[in-house]
Image (tube, rainbow, N blue to C red; front, top):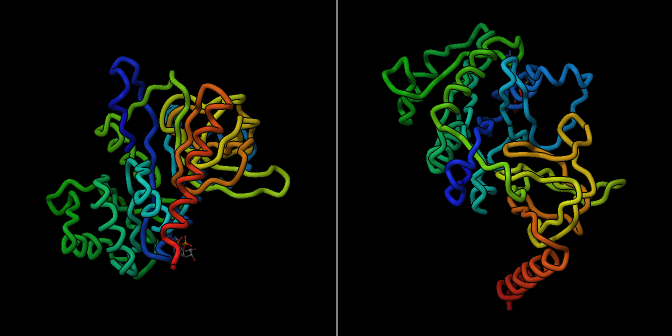
Amino acid sequence: AIDVSEDAPDSLRPRPPVVTIMGHVDHGKTSLLDALRGTDVVRGEAGGITQHIGAYQVTLKDKSRITFLDTPGHEAFTQMRARGANVTDIVVLVVAADDGLMPQTIEAIHHTKAAGVPMIVAINKVDKYEANPQRVRERLLEHEVVVEEMGGDVQNVEVSALKKTGLDDLIEKIQLQAELLELSANPDRPGEGTVIEAKLDKGRGPVATVLVNRGTLRVGDVFVIGAESGKVRALVDDKGRQIKEAGPAMPVEVLGISGVPSAGDPIQVVENEARAREVAEYRQSVLTQKRTTTAPA
Ligand code: GDP
């Protein structure tokens, strides 16, 4: 989770949790992400257009929101963490009830524990005849993941991403976990965030999907992003809509960048373009230096 210690306690406002889904290949990460996306009440209003920008936010019936990182695979998680970008508040570990614990399941458990992030286990594919959720709970014990039925405090839920069962239960458990974490951020300061993914778009130029960590990012803001800089030309949300501003835990595409940054890079709004270029140039020079000093003789 993001460190908010610099902000005065009375400036902090509740913010949505940021959730990463991990698990073994083919256990249903993508299917679950798609199914959860379908629970968004705002998505219906927008006409069901989905943009894959590396993260999305669902708005629930009670108006609360959850942000999901939509980059399946553990690499993104470890890469971001290696770069000091601890954006994930909660990990949902997907385990297929027919397949049980597999190498990447165990790897995900290790990553999650190393990151000190709370975990919720989603036992998926319970619609299958071969499904054995109890066996999954037992096997988890061997890896010191003790679910509630086994006397521990790790929440678990039986789901079927295919039949879309258990999703409300999973969402409820995410909300419960988020409440325990008392997640908050100060929205009233210059925007700061983390790059989730970035690319060079044919028509739009460099585009970065940014998760706002704190403050508010607005159209027209001047910023530094990794070793690049820019001025926000447009902000596009996960429904493809142009928006004016993005607050904490909101994923948004940022246009108007000088070049393509890397996943895990920070973005910070700064006072003016001269300052933005100065910081970006300094970071460029550090990068170049690193490259030359690590190059083989
Ligand atoms: P990922 O590799 O973890 O992202 O897994 P996918 O979401 O791509 O799913 C792998 C396969 O499992 C696909 O063929 C899905 O249709 C199937 N699958 C996913 N969830 C379920 C489920 O709840 N029940 C059943 N029967 N199949 C599922």
